[in-house]
Length: 594
Image 1 (cartoon, rainbow, N blue to C red):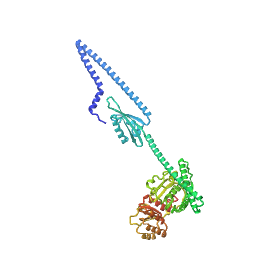
Image 2 (tube, rainbow, N blue to C red):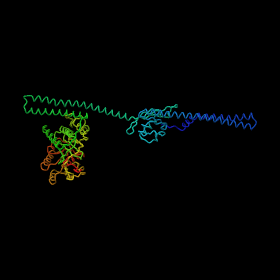
Image 3 (cartoon, rainbow, N blue to C red):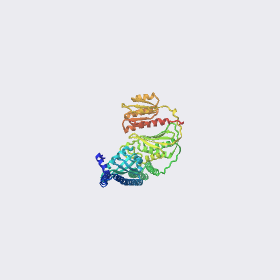
Image 4 (cartoon, rainbow, N blue to C red):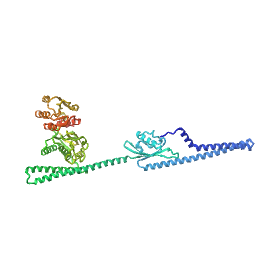
């Protein structure tokens, strides 16, 4: 704002009082003329001094009386003007109060050239730190409130004093305000006041943001529906073509009986695929409608998971896949859980079906371990193609279908994982995953469930776990021992050839878990694994390779490797392996007294 110099200020002050100065000067001249002229007249017409004195006294009283009436009149006029001004101000204040009360979410204000609040009416400004009772008569510079908001208001109000109408938005924490201000014009053309309003637009901002989010979701939903229609038409057409085609071949009398039996298996498999797809659609519809209800009861957890294990082993035998199905549970466990059995079975089935789809060789393993008396952690792990990092963020969304590394799209509706996530959420749990390309995927979910019965031994009965870290490569091995140093674990590290490794194993108790680090030398690692399986008591062997090789991966699994990971191992992967092969095998980390 442009500063005014002292000369302008004096000129302005003199201009304001010029009528009073003129009246005082005229009255002074008239009084002097009155006194001089009357004295001369008295001296000219009257010679008696006593009479002159008496007349001068009367003249003085007359002058005082007239002056008193004049002064009284002037003061009375000013008092009337002041009363009128006060009345006008009160009426204006009432008008502004009424205006502010009828303007929702609005505070009106009036400031002078020094940015002093002459008027501040409305409660909305309190959210900015401007309290009307405390701000009136003070400048913006002197009021303690949000520094950023104060600087913005000062800059824009000074701009308004230059003659511009301004409008801008101000944010203070979670509140949004629109600042509107315009100069109050005067005869001189230069404004001495700026009037404005602070309008709370927080709700409008939220509504706009919600509309944008709704639009985004609508566009995403439309895109997913389009993809779903395209995918579902393909998913229905493929098994239906197989059913019709092989049904005609079964009815052909020239087809040999053994081929008819094979065609029947194709028809049955296609029919099961259609039924599973329809079931997923119905489950998703029920979840969206909110008609899925929980009926919790007590059940034997191990019995349910044993049945799942046998079922999926049979599935791989029928499919002709060389995939090992493993069921991991704590040794000596006999847990009775209070939860929703059917929904838990459905979650595990969806995760296992997903693992079956993406695993051609190696293993599929699932199991659980209780974290405490009221929480159980489940896992489903496979040695399949893994999930690309960019796909992991959206893998649980509806109609999302997994892709291979070469972008080959797998069959399915893309509903299994989203249904599993919704069911875990219904059980008040959480689900997440660990995955790397070529290394497979592990889904984990935690649900609250009261453990009614548990026959695990107490933690005081357990012996310290033993882990062997063997490096058969000349390169630096995996830096995984640092993780185990924080645990009560006996860690042994070996670096050298396989002959020394076998000598070390013969002279010590078998480890609970072994990390075997080696370059992908197919013949060398296969021979080591064969001797480990044939000459020593079985224990988990985790292969850690420095690069991916699909033939090497198949060979190590065929030779008896338990797990396959790429170097370097992350803390999450190491923690998972520790929990899976040490924690679960040894039992719960709490006693029955806890």
